[in-house]
Image 1 (cartoon, one colour):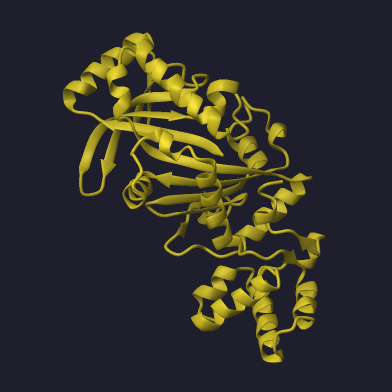
Image 2 (cartoon, rainbow, N blue to C red):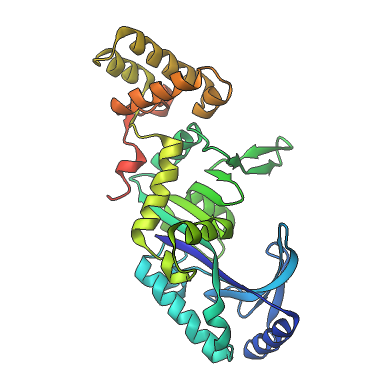
Length: 339
């Protein structure tokens, strides 16, 4: 249910110098500067279950400042497992382990002031074949893009332009990042030198990352304490992932276009509404994108919403499976989350 936790505390100059000395002494001066994260990281950087260091951070309207930052993968802390997500009990234990580490370093007084600056809620869907993972990723990519989200792009060295990610859908705004991806391909590309990608064969990772502004909103809106343990809640994790999944993949199961049309024709809706639904399914199939049909205004908003609602009632996904993919039916991922 949790893949990554990031905790942080803003530092003044004297705290920064004191922590730098303590961390350098504890880790025998073993420190590197990670340019991607703009962070001085202490310790055994490849094997240490925590990334702990001092980060140069910029916040809109507040300028630049330094902060103590800790990034951890709870499953890695206890089991050395960098493939699967951890349950909430493991995540709680990882925070206790971090508190013990602070005591060993001699910086216990900083631990109570750590704030959660990022949490990645994640659910792994275990599919029968790697081909099915690839198929589901492609179907998700043809789904909707949630309101106020933008696809993250990567540079394609072949076409020399920026494209969407091949093996994932990656949407973000300043509050939340959505990343639904092929875990096997991700490991093969980024971590094959120290993790066997075969361990992730058949895994589709559904991951939703809350950033600090979102966490702050939840604290204020729901009256929670601003403490990391407050967010280690299984129901909160499942609800969060399901919410964004339903915005992208809708609620219906996937069918081939011909099968979906047959189901619509055999339904009890009026003929005019059947014709609209069939036209809609055909347009989404031709555009290969539900979001494009919506963004181009091919249907007035009230008609669009009604058709989506009617398709949901029939348990038909507006995204259909191309005939060449070899499937005429696949269940919606919402139905696979608890299997």
